[in-house]
Image 1 (tube, helix red, strand yellow):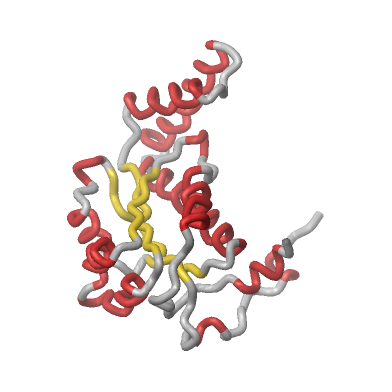
Image 2 (cartoon, one colour):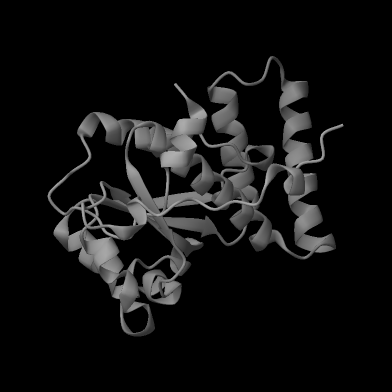
Length: 217
């Protein structure tokens, strides 16, 4: 695998081919990319609404009305659409749920190590809750790590993608009843294969030069 070649091929798709669909085999790998993404203290503060149906995409597209209508077809024509949601808070029950899942998966050699991890994770969460007062923002950062992981991962599969913040997230919160579940929508990512008429597929990439962005000691 030539990672540099993949990075140069990957781009933000502006027009999807509605007739090309992601295979079930690749979809399983996409779910693995989402589930196995890293997060600080393994907090995993995410939930994903995924659809490949006409009805499901139309529900997501409700967030592309009015000012955001420029993203409508990018939702409708994609093979799959993912609504990335972030938790609003991490309560005691969620922290214990994480701990017990890790224990079930064999992460802890003994009870002492298990409780050390539980205490450390709560310390970090409380720092963001009380000291920095940015707990929700901190959790959203973890979701954005997941998005970056997904974009590179699907590129290795030859799948095109478009992350979109240009969607009315309040509409999606209401459409899927997210706030009642302790969640909020933060980004939508469309997946599929670009249309032959997608101008951005042949637009040269532009990045700042190495000498400007790297300090190598």
